Figure (tube, helix red, strand yellow):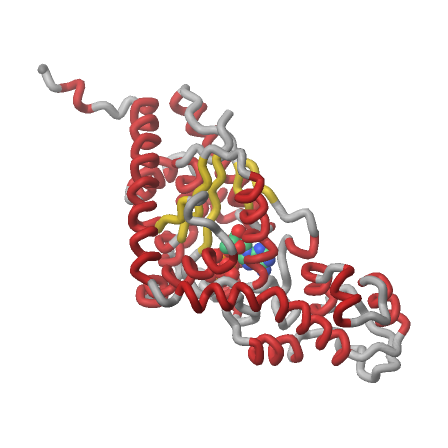
Length: 352
Ligand code: ATP
Ligand code: MG
């Protein structure tokens, strides 16, 4: 079976460190491993419009931002096809045929959609397009014969629904045309759903609790210093909680033993630092400054590549449009296979 990778992001803002650890890091690893037949990264503008219908400019202007974030994080356009969802209109047609295979109650049960509906305050006025985005996501994945989807944990219900739709298509039309895709989650559990700076939910563009890959050094520092730690840890001498403490969660995601040698040599590793915090006698400022050093070191090369890329936006747009054409040809082939399986072949009614 061929190995086809597809993943994507909504152009609703710049990418943040949650995206990096949850999905970009795995994309970079897969890119370096090689051995795949095709690797697509889709900028999901159509999906972003499902909850931004009145904010087209935001979505439109963030396409280039997300593309720059990818390239500056190290995604190589020579190895990966980065394309724009709306430039592949076949995806919308595939979505239409899939809609007939999914019930309303199944959509309403999707736990990620449920969380997002609550988070966005839709109450009972949920846009139909938003409720259906898992179906359009299934179309994105299946249109390219995808076998591997590197994503964060919030996407697992989407993958499950995608496999259900593929099976349902096969059962309904009697032809197996789609491979069943698998999600690839980060090895490090702290990265599955990185919490936001406020400690309440996942880091998310829509919740304004992010450290962005493009944030300037002073902004990163200020955000780190404001991160939620442990409300009961008031004096340095107090015993502190590590679980649910945002600074320790980010350290779990980003800290390596060599960081201690460089920035905090009195500890050998993170376990020692955690033990001291739990015992008491370790202040929040110290752990925050340590985290700040680690994040600055990680973000600096990404930021400087971004500055260089910002000088030639035309080259990036051209790459996106060319890649969208190539993606379109592949999606059109899948759509034709679907129509053949469904028996949607009206040409046969012509006498000659
Ligand atoms: P929005 O608020 O607009 O939904 P988002 O921050 O949730 O934005 P998406 O574009 O929806 O970002 O997600 C893109 C990818 O990044 C998905 O694979 C998702 O699982 C992953 N991801 C997003 N946020 C996190 C996070 N905090 N931790 C781990 N992975 C994440
Ligand atoms: Mg999201």
